[in-house]
Amino acid sequence: MNKILTTTLLAATMAATSAFADTVRLGTEGAYPPYNFVNDKGEIDGYERELGDKLCEIAKLECTWVKNDWDTIIPNLVSGNYDVIIAGMSITAERDETIDFSQEYYPADPSAFLALAGTKDDAVNGIVAAQTATVQASYVNESGATLVEFATPDETIAAVKNGEADAVLADDAYLKPFVEESGGELIFLGPKVQIGGGVGMGFRESDTELKAKFDAAIDMMKKDGSLNELIAKWFDGYQANY
Amino acid sequence: MSLQYCADPSLLHGWQWLSCYLLTPKHQLFYTSFLVVFALLAITAPVVLLLGFAGAMAKRSSFLPLRWFGSIYTSMVRGVPDVIFFLFVPIALDQLVEYARHKIKCPDITAPVYQGSDFIVCAAAKMPTSNADAWVHQLWGFSLAVIAFSIVFGAFAANTIHGALQAVPHNQLETARAYGMSDSQVFRRVHLPQMWTYALPGLSNLWMILVKATPLLFLLGVEDIVYWARELGGAKTSYFEYPHPDWRLWYFLALLVFYLLLTWLSGKFFARLTDKFSVDKSRSKANSIKPTLIGIGR
Image 1 (cartoon, each protein chain N blue to C red):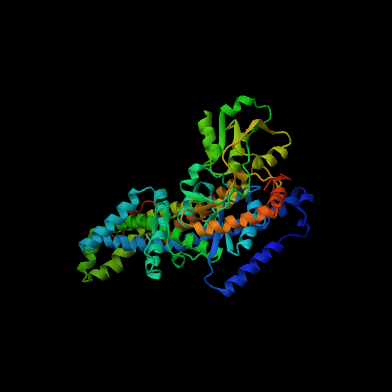
Image 2 (cartoon, helix red, strand yellow; image 1 turned 60 degrees about the vertical axis):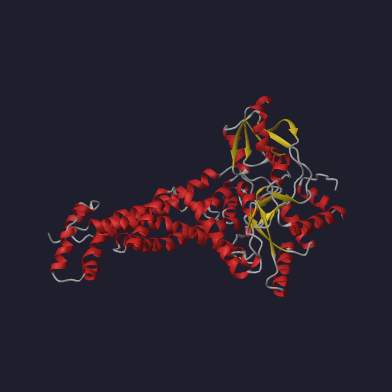
């Protein structure tokens, strides 16, 4: 609550001083806890919400949040609907061809397979669900398993529960609460796989100045240890070494 | 608006949990989004009717280029799948507006607008500008959707109205002329009033299709009822105050009931309207869905 008040106050004062102060629009998916999600108040919440607000404060930028579906999150950045992607996006060479990335603000998260209890380990080569346009989707595609894609992450889990898919491949941090809260219905299957690099913010290739500002802000948070604290808070005590 | 006992959701059970759950601010956003659907219908329907009239008149015009324009408009929109049109128009319109504003507001910038895959206009040309409130962005997106809907359904309406104008028996118009009425008098007194009888079944059908096409708003990124139903229905883990399994089935069922109610009420309304517009009541009651049988003073 306090944080929201500060941001509003900050926004109000900045709007007063210069009516044309550039507002930076942060684009996120709002469906990928703990990275980002829409809470019961209807507000964007999660690790990236808190991180994004903090980074804007450090970089002295006025920021607003925009929700956008995952599968069009890159095209809509490029066409200028918002200025930054901050949506649990792994830094990959393929994406780097269309957009630019900041330095990582979350280390490479291993991906895990989730399945119904009692599923045999070779299900990872059967029908595997993944969210469209994710690193996991391309991994499954290349692994020889049959890929079924879904627009939102929670549909992939629903697919496993319905028996439509044998397993889901997604970030470990996203799947963890589903397994823990399923009462034994859902399990992790087989070993975890390391796909893609760390998680970074996405920018238009022409936006080098904005990217530099956020890079500097991330640097500051890495140096003073506040980034590690934030990660531990949202990712169940996970210790990152920044 | 929230109830006293809702302070700590983790302690709640049964109907108390449910009542608090259904009153969360997020659910209130869902309830208000029904207004978005009604607003779309309330704005689009009259615009569609106007465009339909304009299109039909253009098609009947004695001025050749106007006739071409009318025919191209109706056949082009009719020949393209709605969804493609809905995806194309808002993006094209958005970029067109921003391009024009860029040329007007920032004439000094010579860098090309299209740089590789980036579409770059100056900050002042952004529509809406980046410091505008979120609701302005929502409204802009909604307006683009309204325009797309109006163009598509306007073309359908133009065809319906054009057909209805053709369907009015020719000898009646001749008779009117024989009575000494001018062309515009014939149109206003005989042609137009009778046209409605022939147009109404087609227009009521169009209304039903329009109602059922409203979830396309979701496709255009407008936060409508489908958006919130999917968002609220998805499985929620303990990161949320009200965790629950996948409930999309129930949310979509609610939407299904909503649309059934809406189309059912619309059907009743149009049945009455058809009744009102048919001149020969005794025949129209017997044959209310066959407008070709409704004559006048024959």
